[in-house]
Length: 208
Image (cartoon, rainbow, N blue to C red; front, side, top):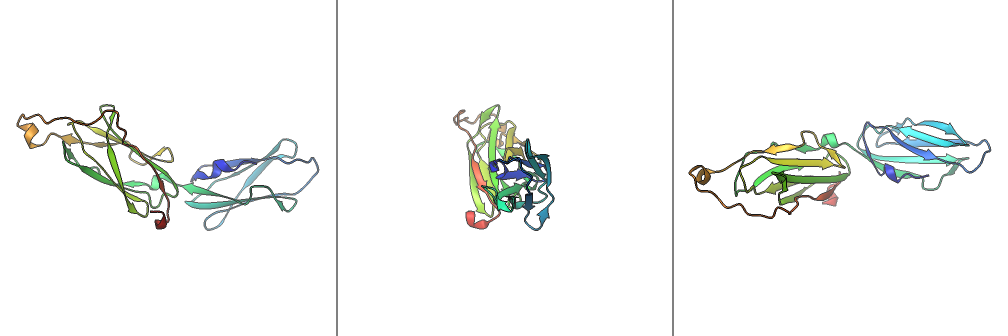
């Protein structure tokens, strides 16, 4: 019985796993899932010959303990604890207007989203922009970058590969006073640099 795919589960989406038994005799199979605050209904279908499929829907962020017993004996690998997350609870602050050569900063708050990988990519004209991510504690981050040209910068933010609400975001960049007077600023930076980080965020401040 494999349960590793349940290590991270999105809320409000059906999670399932398969159970195979080695005997054709009639026996008692008991499956339970306990969420952060209550037991979660589990639907089990199938038979001894073809195996069983257990399904449940995590309805809130947090740990879920999966227990499987066959003839009152825990099946290997259980109890197993998986984590449910909610990418819709990642909050991104408004993106301010930016100026060439000056740092632009915004914040990302994943404190209520659960455990997972927060990934941020910023690009302009198809080129990735060097980006800095500063942990603020409790799964909150300050993100900054320096625009080098007056063009829209696209900000992609995902949590466990799911785009957070509002993504992709657009940062509007203007030239600044000197550019408006006709003095062209230098555009520097490597087109090959990637502003992307995989950040482990958890609800527990002690991880930061």
